Picture 1 (cartoon, rainbow, N blue to C red):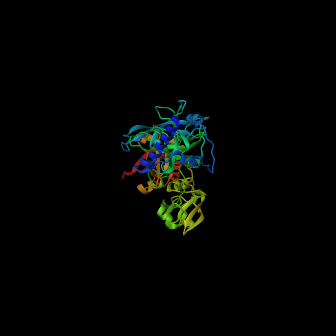
Picture 2 (cartoon, helix red, strand yellow; picture 1 turned 120 degrees about the horizontal axis):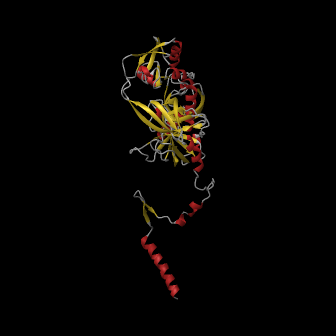
Picture 3 (cartoon, helix red, strand yellow; picture 1 turned 90 degrees about the horizontal axis):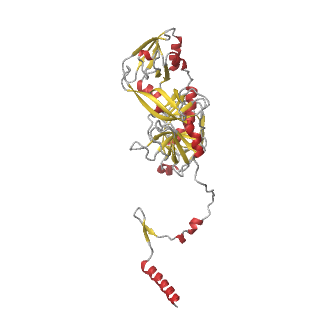
Length: 474
């Protein structure tokens, strides 16, 4: 009897509560309210069968990837020339970063900004061995540089496919800062194709892999590694207000790095191909107006005269949707993809015009609208005999200085040229009175000179002509 009374009383209490209180309300974080949804009402959502299946995995194991990558990541210490003008009164400062060994015979990749304007580069391996490094070549437009140390049987890393990585994928950032030795941090890929406007110049390529793996000063030039132990990027930059890591780090994709290194090794400079267009991201409003289902694509705003796109019949207003069957969603992706090719290469461009898709085969050109790859000029003899190295001026440098010639990129301390007080950055415009316009003509004139040399030229920003005289052999 007592049990029956209790049960009736409980039922009556619940009935009256529901009638008097009405439906429950909840306050969301944004201040809006909504009905309370009890678990039983959404059971079918949690128990619904998906059309795709996946296997649950145990926590990701980073041990193998760390063991493979850390021996191949090195510390780089560069002595830099700073200030003081052209008469050698500048001071020497140090720059420290990381690098990655890419071959057993000592080729090392790092960032251009780590070794820029350096006079002496030292590489320290993970096992503490130290080497003098030679700068093979450097590319400011991608912030990639290639070094060479004289050693064999070195640990090295294999390239992975940066196109295959996905947002949310686990990655490792491996560096070798000077005071911490090898460091390994983990994170996920936060985004791809990021442009953060850190590289100067209109021809720069910024299509960074963004991660939340901790990358701090000294890790520039280090490795971004997938869980298979493959190199998928070179860590380059962080976004920070404090000067330390704050959750955003950026790496140059390995597919672009690989192409730049091939060029630097084979030609001494990067062989850049261009479509010959000005472009901008497509927005949703324009996409609706022209009949595209979404805003994935790149809009051509201008066609350069005699460029690759002009020859192929592309027009301003066309929307580029893909290159070689790879979808192109944003401007950085297009720039990175084209940057993997050399002048003279052909690519297939898919584009949208007047409500239809078209495909066209495009023969890529360089900035001078040439399809030829620049010939490689070996400068080892200049470095060994005279003590300096030369490089061609970039198109931007030629436009900025209005000078044609060959630039002195480095000078060995104690060499014949060093004794003349010549400084890196000197642009040679004539050799023994003969005008020269590039490195090939400069080296030919130096080779043909019997003994005495007179190198005339300019420093950027200095109006006066400078002349250096010396003998080829002491």
